[in-house]
Image 1: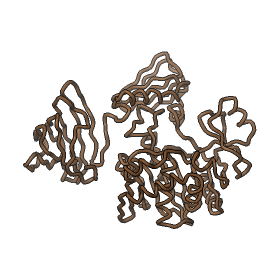
Image 2 (image 1 turned 90 degrees about the vertical axis):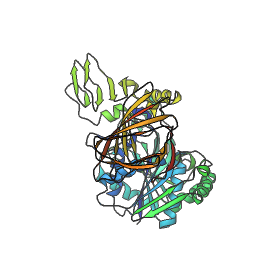
Image 3 (image 1 turned 180 degrees about the vertical axis):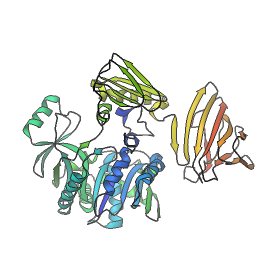
Image 4 (image 1 turned 135 degrees about the vertical axis):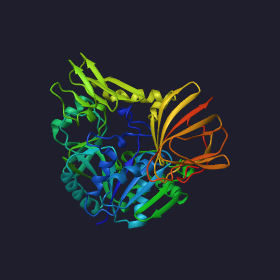
Length: 471
């Protein structure tokens, strides 16, 4: 058996704002043990038997961040491959492109296990057993979904009515009254959004039920760039043709239309971590029911979820609150309204506010930058560059930059000059000058950048050359 766990890593995670942002979505949130949800998904797939490689479908902007996450936990050096989307076109397109790639490499009998990057599964043994059962059904020609045994009348999940492994029907997210009926009947399962099938079966079913998606995805792949190395492969989907792929979920496009569906009922400690309440529930409560991450002082505080990485949080005389502190945004919400956090995210995005997209610390393939302070006509950043990494050769129309090296040594292109800037030395980059920053050393390069100008937006950048393909 050839098993290829396929991780779908996308979405905004708007209900987990302000920690989750467009360029730091929910899969990258770190849990109390130090690992991210994405890393846990990778390990979950890696620990299964018969794994040939782990394929990840993600946004082009998240590739280097995803690669760094995997590098931290991939001690066994499992082969990794990536399909990079220029923008989201929903799960049907993602699964179509993955199935086509796997079919080309391993043939139509290869088993594709679709995993979400932002779910949590507590029982790896039970999960392994469920996958084994699903693989048997997949080899018999079934498209298999995983149904979670419900323990509460949850209104935030879709449901599957089932008789053993037979799917009777899929049900949309119900009212509370209906959810209570489903729970009492014992015939309904939560729809986990995880799937297992041979790629041959899925491609045949897509040809029957959503041929436009399959044809458009094939056409896109034919126009796309690919690269391969030792234990690594990457397909970067062409943005012009990918825009022509219909936007639809795999549930609507295939699963709800096919007559070859099966379900594996399972109890694997599954959660989709769909709100701050769900994420907070992973922590042990104190004597007053508070679930805390970070430095806090609480007085007469009951049943609150509090999260802070840097600042001290003090509370007095409150209960049933969600309090989430980040360097540039604070969320305060009633626990009963945890699902409504997405409306704050939506309004920020509609207003063009950067807090929907970026944290003060932004991750790039070369390292990170943190905005320390900004005001009228100036912005101050702390920049950290990895060893042997470099920023693109670039130019800004509207701002000049002063660079002061705090730690390490910088190799700098400044106009026609190339120079080395050591610790406690600086250089000045006038607006309109081509420039590049590189770390030639073995340790991280840390520097302070002071920007001055009439416009300091991150989109004031012209790239001429870039080792990461962003030019």
